[in-house]
Image 1 (cartoon, helix red, strand yellow):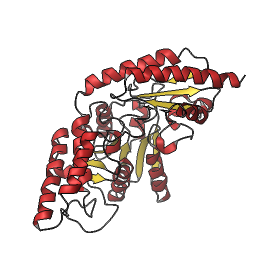
Image 2: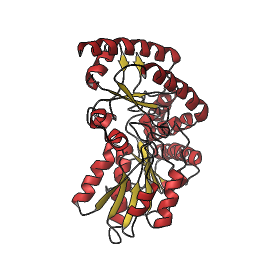
Image 3: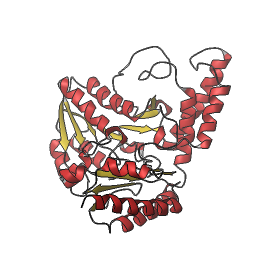
Image 4: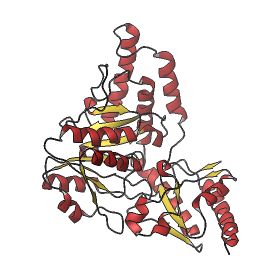
Length: 376
């Protein structure tokens, strides 16, 4: 099997799975319980939380565990809007966000909030002048992802924060950092709110987190009992938290070295398939190497993906949450509808091997040639 859909999800690493199983087997108490089993479990949970806070140099109280980045995005955007609706009703997002952000915006519009979509340039970078013009006294929050999930465009998050705070110091800055974490260095201090997910970094599915600066106030979306966090009441999923902490520790090791290796794999693929007639490479100078997007002019993406699957080679289209839809990111960057409905995403990891890429390219060329000839 050759798996090249790491931006959709990753397999759980052995070490992470071991941490999860140990926490599940040996720490059975509810961390909210007062007895010794509960105290033992709470001690383990607090240790994991401290490990994460130390990794990002943030306060332990600034972490809220969620079911994943989609819930984190909901918590950040809706929670911020509800907490500040007396002073503003305006939200700004980019045209390069994960589909979950746009669904949240649809909901916010339905309850009276105004949504503005900031432009980007031809390389995918946020148009700073347009951002400045769109920020106004009523702007509650700006949400711009650190790395786009389809083309991999990396935004200058720190610079964007400076622009926002200069125009309106009260406007919050949220960033979905799901596709950045474990691939490039991230700094939570560049934002007020940040979303990440464990299953993108060889951690378990079903857990993510929201970073919220301690000075930021947002309203909870759910209510219930539980002492751990007012934004996320209930019994904390301790084994998932422990596994997440382990995955994060492993993900942040040798990031630069791993990125350089992935870059060489990316360049090898581009050099090979760019020579094929009818393929467009959707990549800008700001794209991280882990995500390579291409468009097929004559072959339906799903046809090509299923043909590759017969050889146990697994690719993706768009994001996993909008598979088969028109790519809003490609439209935002290239303004080409045909290009945007024919995308394939090849996503790489530091565990991808050169041999896998060689076998992938051999199969890619053969299948592309065969399917392309059927269109004549």
